[in-house]
Image (cartoon, rainbow, N blue to C red; front, side, top):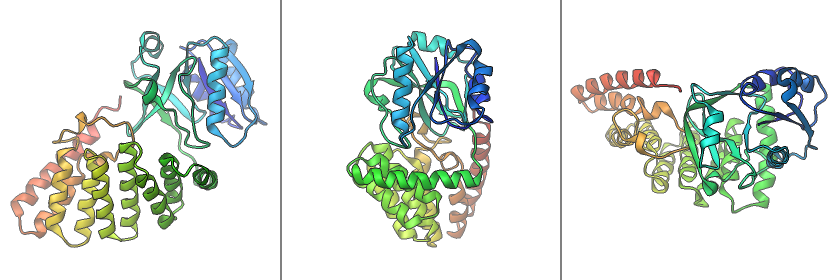
Length: 348
């Protein structure tokens, strides 16, 4: 069955449910405080498959998601597929119902449409673990056995600027409180950093990312926190510090090619083309064009441009500054090929 948390989302819930209604037995909708026509719209799409339950909203997404999974199990479900009102599940030729029936895993993950990260979306019931966190809630899929599906993806709708700002401000308030209560959990510092960065509060974001990295949690998360801190430092034109953060990130996960790419960018901005070339060449090693990036297991965020044409973008300018015309010309050609390869990559 599908599970959907909803408030006042009458304008978008229909397409969310349409993306799953044909191949699930039940569309379970969790009312967290609806006062518009959302529930009537949902029932019109789900028909006899529509089941409604109510959950009193307590500013805690993990609590609401755990309630949804528990309710799905109580209703007799073997699997639950989560589809938020602003999401659309895209099987892309995969029979998700059949995959769940045959799976030995307890959690199946779907990548977002750009295939930049994966998110837990299918859960064997009863759930083998619990969601944690009041926002940017996480499910420890690695503890219970999971895999990322090859073709199926989900698409997430964009939000208007005012709605986005309101979300970021809400998340900063919630996560500031949560990190004070859980100072040893790196995940929430990472997402606090993201929310602050999205509000252009860059020094505060850097401090949050640094706190995440210092706690040395999951190596991919720790490395990406260093990457995000380095992005903020580049925006502030604090390029030497950005390079230091990238180097630190590579000590946490040496396979994150974007760190070397960003260090190369920072070195170029510092008018140090030789170092920029070295960093760019390192980025190519674990990239997705001429490197072995496809063999590096990753489920978190990725910067696809940095994994394809980004290093060659640095090389074509840095090599020319060093008087290496042949190298610059070769990098230009590689840049064009890598950019075309990224554009042509399969999305499903």
